[in-house]
Length: 516
Image (tube, rainbow, N blue to C red):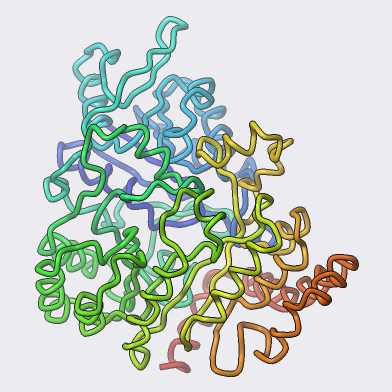
């Protein structure tokens, strides 16, 4: 069959879509992939945007899908309205909706399409296509919600796939891949693949699932859906991972860095990491970054990854407050972070840690934020602190709680349809305005003399009660300072986004040569 799969998100990495495409192709189906990423002409320079597509783009989608029997769209909460926009213009085709948002909100999505897929759906979609081909009934396909004769059928989930090696390598063959560039949907090229990154960086998953159920994360809902019936964390074998990277290098030869986006690469066994060290250095030999959960950061395991080429490790801290972490249902506390940071610091000449915080949480009180700042001051330098705004995504536990308790009075309060990285937008509508701004100010590189954007001696003054009281009284002043600080970066981004794609690629190549 002729099938088109569309991503309306802001990135072309999309592992799930590529995995589904390769499985369908391995069974003889013709598959197009369309990545409707957004440029400055839609987003006004925002890194993330929920802006809808202009009519000219929709018309191009209609032309590209005119011969397709099935059109599937994947979306997150941020881009759900784009998915609806496409569905409204493709009436008469078999339309499917999958991804994180439909998985958590199928009752909403089934109002716009007849078929909604939940959870990991490679084999569910393959079964669906085969049933369509053979004229069989679709009513019993697990993972599928469907509308039939005006009635919604809600099928249960199938067991999770425990053998990830049984799946074909994700589809990075750029034939029949398309991307939205400057208002035109064009054939994918290698330079378009890396356009949104400073480096030619590739995002790769080597495992699925997370053992933790943090209330701010979709993994909480995902784990609850499967309700302990199936093994949540599943890993590709190391040899499969190396073969996948070798295959990707054939299609993306200018790739120069890899980001393993597993929830925790260090959850692998020591034997796995020994084999990875050997094969990765021999066959791939590129610098990489990965995530690490503090309780799993062990010196000999970390040493194997550093020796293989690990340059950055991202560690979720979220908060220094035990109360906040319990609210997040995250049993990784200050003592765990400090213990892990000491292990990481043993490799400080080769490895840069990036500790991630969540701020702009309306539930947090003054003491919670001060504990977070205190923890940041105790981490051994050098390190980078990344601060992200708390976003309430529809369907996750935190969203449901905030909705029930009136913290989310309207959907705008949830923040999911805004640029998650826009400090000015999120900080101004929360409590503890000054301290949340202060956490933003200390994000960045920490050295012996500097905490992010602030000299260390000054930080001591800024956390005094008298200073906090003053700036809470005159809260427009810290908001103004944050605006002034972020203004040059926003202007620079808008200028960069005003360049043509050709000039963006030229500039990127020039900078790569200059910094080499």
